[in-house]
Length: 243
Image 1 (cartoon, helix red, strand yellow):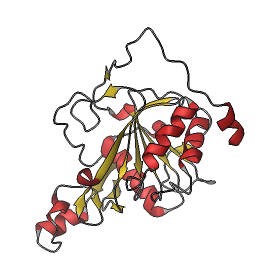
Image 2 (cartoon, one colour):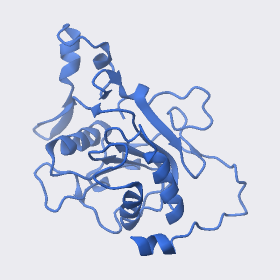
Image 3 (cartoon, helix red, strand yellow):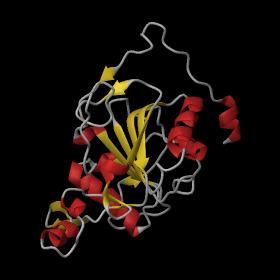
Image 4 (cartoon, one colour):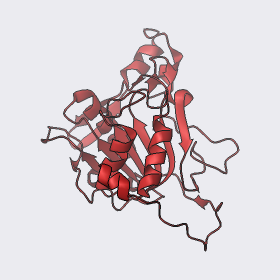
C-alpha cells in the first residue's frame, strides 16, 4: 500500500463550483444503502449486518462481505474491485466489524481507506462504522485524512463512542424476514431495568441509546441529509435512531 500512498493525490478542485456549495439529498431509500461486513465468518458481526439489511430492506445486491468462504446466512456477495464503484454522495455505506480506537477489522485508517478504494469507492455521503469504540479516539478523523490522500469524497463519518451492542435478532418465517428485540419485551415487564431498551435498537456500553453516544465527523465534501444527524442545514437534526 505504500506505493499507492506515494502515488495518491487529491483531485484538483472544480473551480466552476463555489467552495461552500452544499448538495442536499433526501434520507436514504433501501436502494441507497450499502452494507459491508468485514467479519462475516463471525456470528455476531454477520447477525448485525443481517439485522440492518432486514430492517431497512437493503437489496442483497448492495450487501457484501470479505470472508474467504461463503457462510450460511452470510452478507451478500464477496467484495470485488467494482463492488462500491456505483456509490455517490447520495449513498450511505455501513461497515460491520470488530473494532477499537485504533483498528477496524484489524485495519488502521490507511489500510481501511485503501481496502475501500480497491473495492471501487470514490465517493459516499455517509460512512458509518458499526464497530466498538471507533468514535472514542481519532480513528474517524484519520480515516478522513486518508480518504483525502486517495481522492475519495465522503460527506460524514460516524462511529460509536463505546462498546456497541445490538440485541435484535433476525427471524425468518417462510419467505418473510423480520427482526425481534428481546430486550424491549423484557423492559416492558420490568425484567430489564434500563428504559433505553424500550426505544433504542442499539445500546452503547450496555445502557446508552446509540444515538446519544455516536460521534459524527464532517467529511471533505459538503452534503446534507435533512431530517438526520448528517445535515449541515438542519438547526436541530433528528437522531437517526436504530440506523
